[in-house]
Length: 225
Ligand code: DX5
Ligand code: ZN
Image (cartoon, rainbow, N blue to C red; front, side, top):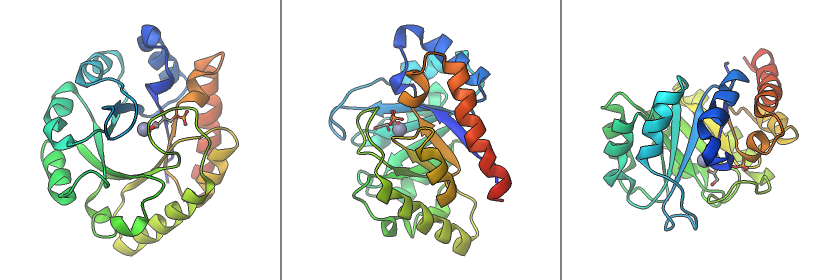
């Protein structure tokens, strides 16, 4: 199965954003992960659709938009118009998940569901088969550079079982604390999409680091078919 690197621009230098994204692309990145925070759902603020629109002109990579905001339904149309290719909402925030996913997919955009470290996978049992992507948070959302929570890997393994049972091909993404040490562990558990912020953008050479991480990730393609 194909494996993907999704650099999170949360850790990029925003004055250099275009160059930084181009460097990850040259290093083999597959998606650009965009963390949207509102200071309510998470204790941090980032950016909105304007930045997605600007990125869309800069890169040909799919934009993977992770909404860590209250009432995401109100802003989803803006993110779709701005050029989001994937939109992921949090299970903890959205009451009518099935409706929200359908409204995203009806616009030709892929729809995902994320869960925080404290949320069990059982909350996804009835929605996974309707999702294009499930995002397992492996840190508490809000900030880059946090320590990986190992226990979240058992959730990945449970999701792989759900995927086998339903026969639906949703992607399994992991977000938080991914680096050279933790990516191999997540690969072994069955992750498909690896979000990495500080591991990519704090590196002295972003292109080289992207390539290094991508090589580790791709090594899993042959092993986990
Ligand atoms: C955290 C964000 C992540 C963050 C990951 O709330 O969702 O995407 O950028 O950063 P690192 O890879 O530094 O843990
Ligand atoms: Zn994220």
